[in-house]
Structures are given as C-alpha cells and as structure tokens.
Image (cartoon, rainbow, N blue to C red; front, side, top):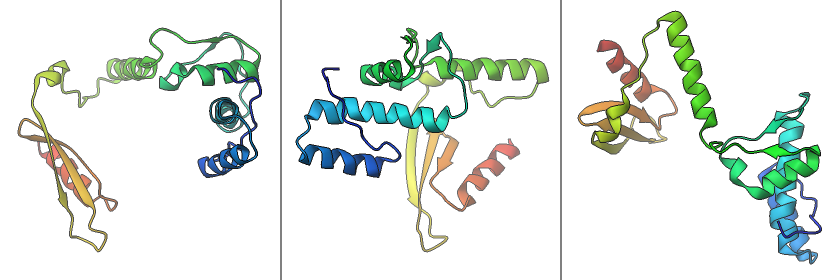
Length: 173
C-alpha cells in the first residue's frame, strides 16, 4: 500500500514471477514496489487475462473469497478496472454459503438423498491415521479420517484403489 512505483512483474506463472522479482531486486528496485505492489498487480492481470477472459466486468463489482482480505489485491483490482471494489463483510464464506444454497435448492427440487452428516459433527471425536500402500512401487501414503469409529474419508492414492474401497463401504450401508 506504500508503493508509489509498482514494478511490472511477469505474472503468468509463479516460477517466472519469482525469477522476475529476484531480477528486479538485483536491479535495485525497492522491495515495497516489487513484492507487494508488483506482485499484486501481476496476480490481478493474470486473473483478468485468464479466468475472466472474454467476460465483461461491470459495476457494482463485489470481491469475495479469502483473497479479498488482501488490501494490495483490492487496490490492484481498483487500479486495473477503474472502478470501486466492494468487499462484503462476510466475503470469506460467501462461496460456501452460495454452494450450500445451491445444494439446498437441488435437494428440494429433486428429493435426492444427501451425504450430510448433521451439524452436531463438531461435538464428535475425530481421529486420523495413515498407512503406506504397497500395491505398487510408488508406495503412496493413504490418509484416513474417522468420526468416532466410522471411516468417513480416505485420500492419497493415485490409482483409486483405496477410494474405491471406501465407496464400496458407503454403498453397503
């Protein structure tokens, strides 16, 4: 936020951005102009040129998600778009709320069963364990999560062997 002369950083990928930032530092640019302002502007350009490519962004512009907490990114969006950026109070959870509303609507419209386990899960005991799969030379680390004694999740396999076993356990219930 203190930068008066943001340095243009290559923002196409993190490797190029890091190399470019080191190079700019070697050239004598100030850290505040490189790391914060330059990087924030590179990230905003990357978003607009890739994620938002071909989409018209019109005011009012609402910015949600955890990254909306970053004042440097907000400032860079405002500079790039030339518009006020509105960050709602609950920007960090708006995506989750939206997903929950869509799931609720889907359930109400179709009557499909859900895997929702209830809000009381916070009061239950969780434990994790891991093991090494010896099914192939990669020896993947498989992580399991249990609620009380029920296996609820497993991940880490690339081949699907262990996630398939978990889905078979679910279908047997």
